[in-house]
Amino acid sequence: MTHHRLRPTSLAAALVATALLAVAAACGQVAQAQAATTCKPPSRYPSSGYFTSLTVSGTSWTTGRKLTLAYYRCRTKNGRAGTCRTRVLRYRCTEKRNRIPTEINARVTCKRGSRTIVHTYQQNT
Image (cartoon, rainbow, N blue to C red; front, side):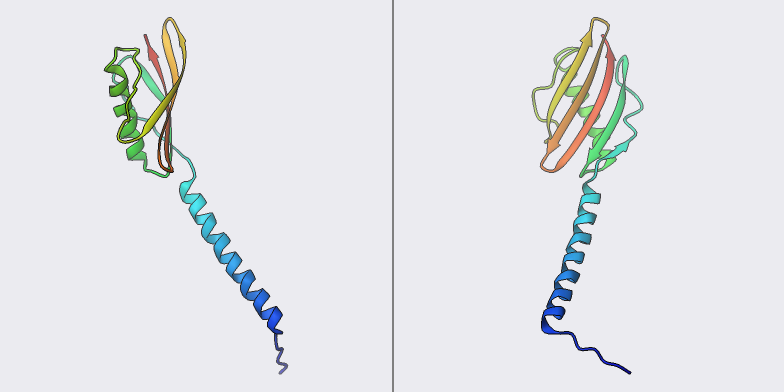
């Protein structure tokens, strides 16, 4: 039976390589946990229109659906085609709209720290 002795530099290099692989694996798990997930938006739009998409990152689908409806309520306090100017469920939201006389198509991005919720909707005016 042959015994191989590792030189101190080889042993140190092997330990460093093992540590780097462990860190890389942990980073991959964190990145995977923070990846954006597309989920089913709320099925019932409160008025004439519909939610077209919902994507969450760093939070749950349930929170995404709750925020989507809460944002709608905030927005329509200022009229059917109103905008929301306050935080919603402690998220800061921005909205980009395309509007024609008969409808509004919008993308809403809400952030709270590393958590992000994006939803789109189409509303008839």
